[in-house]
Image (cartoon, rainbow, N blue to C red):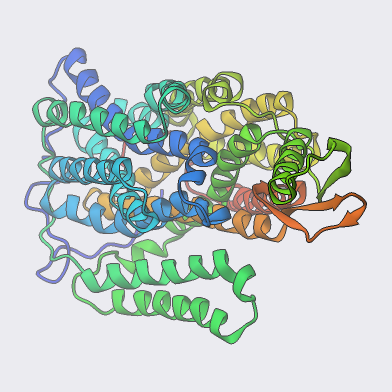
Length: 543
């Protein structure tokens, strides 16, 4: 097996304070001790996917609290992925330098603060600030992968990574049910109070149960590199999201994307020259690492689009209900203005362009009727992928996942937008979802030396978060271009068209599905040509 070029530790490069094998591995511990530690780590990492599952599904309910935001409500999810992407390599490097358990706990505290902000504000800016603080929870998965590699006996590492990637069922199963119950019976604010409470319970468990990894790297943190990476990514995402409103080819709009690309180029240049980069560029561009990261970026587009779209579409009322509501609203306005009642048939309303989806589900109904089956499938397939990777390598589960991604994207785009179709296609997609999220960290752990694991897994988090955020930004732009308008006639006289907020045409969603399917196809090609991951996973011994 080929090795990644490495320089011996010097005063100008990574230096371990412990021997290569002295990471605090629980080789002599009982199975009960090993699996208790694993369970606490996994439960803590479920904070990020649990909030994502609940908040993305609840956007349709959150939107009315922030009037005027419109389709930009997606930035409640986009900013989470964006900040998470920017923070993950920095927090991953901090975990290498300062300790993984310590950074675990710091991320948890920041998440609680963000939840409290969101639960108590009606200001859109403060709400987004809370989401930014919560985004540090994305890095808990990055840290958890490193902890598992450091602490678990080698034979349990692939299984541990697979289980960590898809969870123990709290986020996948309990999350949608709990979120639906809270939103339907209380308000969306109860979501954030519940997330904060869960985190406050987990913090002392992590502190007392999980040992600290003994692995340390003596380095200073490259703040300039982190700022260039996060700034470049942010500007590109803003261009993708706002390009439709501002004009894609307008010079002032292009300035955003050009500046973002320049910052990312500067990031690479700076990182190749500084003594202690946030990420070793030789390692980053090695095929075993680069192909995994590129595949993560393209594949994750579909995760962002599917999780948002089917939840939002299912909770939207059907076209007849929206049309009747608009008609009643216009009748009430006319009667209030004239003091004369009008027969219902005097007001005619037609939606342009119209749409075919819409079940009008509550969040709890969506969880029970669509999301729950997919959640169970994802959890099972994540553990299964870890077992498969240990026997034949992680590349096969990844290829299977991406084939499913492409097929389900096409199905979402061309099949009728009914709840039954959503249930069945989402269940199939969830097979790929579980395999994908288990395979990627295993491939990365197998690809890098242990002293680079934190920042390398952080870069994997960057690519996955960026992919989700790009997918959401793209579908947001398509929805903006396919907004719903009511064509109104009162007593046979045409009235000015009236926009219907928070409802969008079929084509906006369908274009989003086609784009993420194409992106998944690119990721599939990369996985097919990948030489890495074709032998049984070793738990990180072969690098």
